[in-house]
Image (cartoon, rainbow, N blue to C red; front, side, top):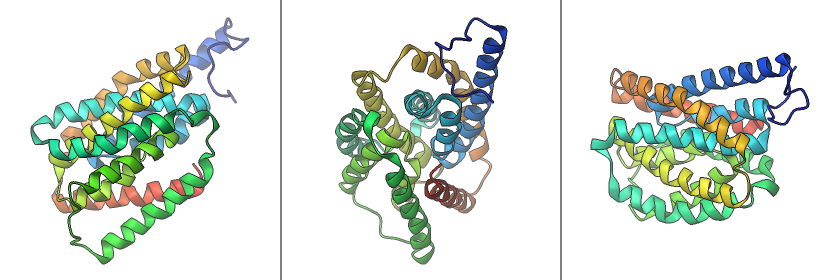
Length: 259
């Protein structure tokens, strides 16, 4: 079994090591494409599911910043594809809370205890689905509330790579659907991931290996975002909400499992 990919492996000059690197990149690209399709349909999910995949391939401290670069391109693609439906006021409110927390927390990544936080998020996500089932028509949150949503997202995302499922219930409760939901959520995530990139750079986590891996996975990610955009237009609003809630449950269980 090949361990986490490294660029300075003592076997780097052998054909076996080169083949292992290629196989790892192909595996990561396939996963990035498939889960970018999922994100393109549900608005989230790709980052949550990619984190355990990337961790197994690259190791945790490389996986989180690589995942951030991949998500940066995925969300940029979704913003462009849904640009006519963006709720710019919500995006601005979200960024006010998200950017400072993402920068501050991103600097702590190298020493953060991740396991307790992931399980807490898992409990929260499952509770959200139960709450939505019990309250199918919740009162829409105020625009000001999205400052707090952004702050919590900035904190969690900088540690875990992605907390898209955490924000999804709030965008749904606001009444956003389809292109408005996908584009607005992606634009909020874009501000978040941009701040994290700056923090990781300041914390010396953006190594040459991380940058090469992130750039290598961008084509597969953008292709997946485009495919997801084509699929989402073929489903009803009711099915769309069910897909998002299903994604919340899967993400919650994964967090609880510590993946």
